[in-house]
Image 1 (cartoon, rainbow over the protein chains, first blue to last red):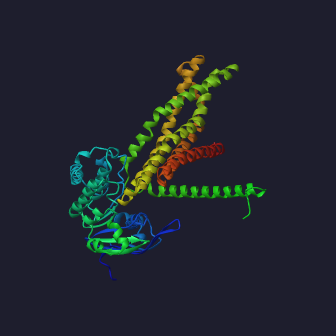
Image 2: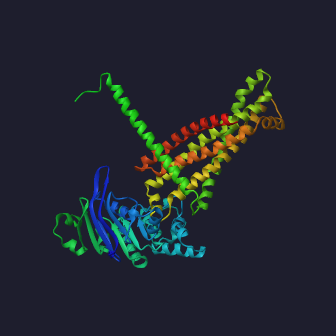
Image 3: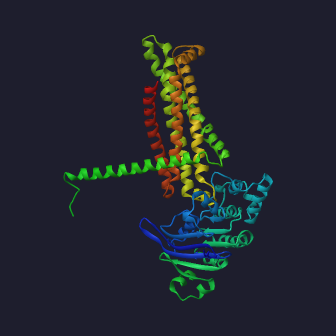
Length: 244
Length: 270
C-alpha cells in the first residue's frame, strides 16, 4: 500500500448546509512542517474545512486523512486519541467560563499527563509566560480582553504540545497592533512547540508573517495554491482583491 | 391560485398542518431524548470519572437550593395547616392535622412541588449553562482537546441531580412539618412531642418508599432534559433562551406525568 507523505490530506470533500453547497470539491494536502494559510471571502467554508479536519463536522462526501487515517471512519475513542495530537484555536478563544485561567490550562493536562502538582504548576506558568500573561493566572475569562482571551486560548492549546495546529481566524476582531502581536506569538510558538499548521484568516498582515503556502477558496473549491510572493505578483482580479 | 383564506377548508387545512407538524416535532424530541438517555447509560460507568466536577455539581445543585426550597416548604406547610385547621376543627379533629399534613406532604406535595421548583431553578440553570457553552464553542473546544464533554458535563450533572433531589425532598418535608407545627400553635396549641408523635404514627412504608423512589426519577429526568436541551442548543443567544424555556416546560410536564404513572403503579403494588 502506498502511503502519501501528507500529514493532512483532504480528497474531494463536499459539504452542504440546508441545501446550500459550501464545499463543492476540496482537495487540500499539507506536508509535515508546512504553515498553510487558507484565504477566502466570508462564507466560503474556511472554518468548515478546519472543523472537517478535526471531526467536528462530517463531510457529505470525500475523505479527510489525518496522520494517514480517515477520521470519518474512526470510532469515537480512536478519533479522540487522534484529536489529542492536534490543537485548535477557536475564533473566540472558547475559554471555559466557569474556570479560572489556571484551571483552563490545567484542564487538558490533568487528563492526559501524569504530572505532580509542581510539574503542573511549572507547565501552566511556562505556557502563560510564553504568551506574556503570567499575571492573569487567577483571573476568570470575563475579566479578560478579546486579545488576552485569544492568547490564553493559544496557551491552552499549545500546552499539550500538538503536532498540528489549526487556527480559526486568530486575529479577527482585534486592533492592528494586537493582531500583529498574535501573529508573532503564532510564529514564535510554532518554532517552540510544533511544526505544522493551517491558519484560516483574511488578515493579510498575518498571512505575510505566517504563511509558507497559501490556498485560496472560491465557490467551494481551491481556486489557487502558491506562495505569498506568487500571490502578490498575480494578475488575477480575485487574488488582487485580497491585497488592495 | 385557489384562495384558502376563506371557506370551509380554511380551518381544517391550517389545523391539520399544525397538528402534523406538532406530532413530527414531538416525535423528534422524544427520539432525541431517548437517544440522549441511552448515551448517558452507555457512558455513566465508563472511566475516567470526573469526581471533582461531580462534587462541585452536588454543591451547586444541592447546597445552593436549600434556602429557596426551605422557604417555599415552610410557607406551604404553614398555609396548608392554616387552611385545614378550621375545617377539621368543626368536627373536633384538630389532632388529625399533623397526620394529614405529613401524609399529604410526604406522599405528594413535597416531591412534586420540590421537583417543580428544582426544574425551574436547577433544570433551567443546566439548560442555560450548557446552551451558552455550546453556542460559544466551549463544548467543541473540549471535544477537540480529546476530552469527552458528554462524560464531563452531562454524566456529572445527571448523577448529582439524581442523588440530590431525594435529599432535598426530605429536607423540604422536614421544613414543611416545622411550618405546620408553628401554624398549629398559632391557631391553637400542641406540644412538639405530640405533634411529631402524631406525624410518625400516621406514616408507613407505603407513604415513604414510593415517594422517595419517584424523587430519584424526577431528579434524573430534570437534569437529563436540561442537559439535552443545552447540549443541543443552536442559534446563538436565542438558542440559549429557547433551551432554557423548553427545559422548564418539558421537565415540569414530565414530572407531572411521571408522578401520575408512579401513583398508579404504587396503588397497584401496595
